[in-house]
Length: 329
Image 1 (cartoon, one colour):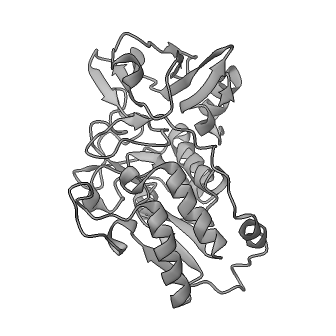
Image 2 (cartoon, rainbow, N blue to C red):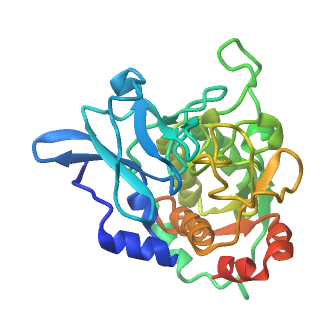
């Protein structure tokens, strides 16, 4: 459990400039201790909201119980909720610019409720003990221009399944089961890397994970963030690199997601869509660099991927070439 958090003036300045590359350490839900009280620090960006509160299992979803204070003109709201615990579900209740009531999942949540539920879940992503030290040391010596790479692309939800049961209607393998089966297959077939499809949280199974609502959360279909870390850790210990598919161009219009987040088009082009069910990320500093933060988060902290595979980037290129340049950084 961390110490007291606050969205400071420096945070506001960096966020406004589009250079706060580890803002995921502040936005979202973070178990902390303030004085002698243990609880959770919540922060969310809703620049055009009249008011924001956090609702969840810790306050019986009471919209008045945990109002959030605006940290500054940048539009970040924050609060500390004593007694909130790891494992509890929550959402943000937002009063929009025109007085509308909006219920949103946390864009920076590290775990989500299993679909069809749409809430976020408080979790601690720093409590896993990695055992892949040898792999990480050897990775630094890897030269992609000389060393062989053979990549096996796999969608966890369809690659291998159990017989369907009442408890597991889709027959999904969990992350830990997948680790053993996938590593053995990849080694037998002579691959050096796996490329995981559809890992970030998404509401619709049929999208294969390419309509994302939770960019910082591995999907709960196959287990917890700790289970997912085990998958990556196990593959590394079997000398297998891990690549993650990344979809930075668009997101779905589901009511609990990023679309019209505070009653206005915060993350998206107001009138530009890929297809009727999708929105395209708007090309402004505070949104573009949020996508860069996602890149940094999955590669550096805390999941240590080999690299990301960037998908649907043409949607970005056709709307604003500067975004493509930013994402390449």
